[in-house]
Image (spheres, rainbow, N blue to C red):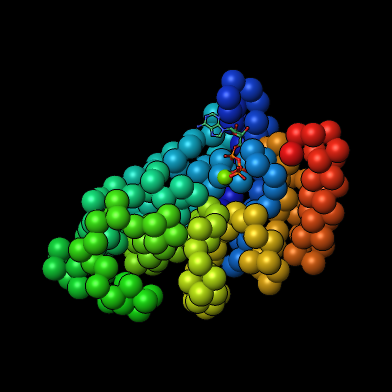
Length: 237
Ligand SMILES: Nc1ncnc2c1ncn2[C@@H]1O[C@H](COP(=O)(O)OP(=O)(O)OP(=O)(O)O)[C@@H](O)[C@H]1O
Ligand SMILES: [Mg+2]
């Protein structure tokens, strides 16, 4: 179970990016941190089979991601960093019900379950709302709920809370904390990761640090402060 990266090689933008990356991700809560472009989203996309390694292998919940397809996507849910990359349907109800229909429910059952799920997250009456009329944060919430609805065994969350208001962020993170599934979450909000089991700090496609949050997060904060100061000094910020 969990996610295994074995000697993964992947080029991005014409150059070597992940080179011989091996990771065994079995803890229940794993955070990914790192500067923009460090590889967090790329790692999550590899875990979900949206990207395939050029060499090496990625095994998610016992399944090679090369044998992707519906089975893998049912096991491994992925909340995209950008809701517009995730959302397929014109209405909230269709988006949230989609995974349930794929999982075998009838359209009527899926719509009822989607309505219940929305209502339990403070979104009663959203079922027929047009996605195009939602704010960024509202779209982000719909994306999270659409994935939660299918109860995947592994949840990959890419900056899932970046546009959410504080009440929604607090209630959703409390709910996520109670879920039994494995969660791998990329986040620039380090506070969300302080009680995770493990945090991996990526830098230019390499693991710069890997350990418990109390070790990795202070080191990453110190790096961020130093880098920010340098950017300010050199006029790049
Ligand atoms: N579609 C793409 N095609 C080619 N290269 C890409 C693509 N998306 C990202 N990259 C490159 O891959 C590298 C890793 O990007 P990635 O999106 O994984 O970073 P990230 O850590 O998620 O950053 P952020 O904090 O901005 O979300 C970067 O060098 C980026 O330029
Ligand atoms: Mg990213």
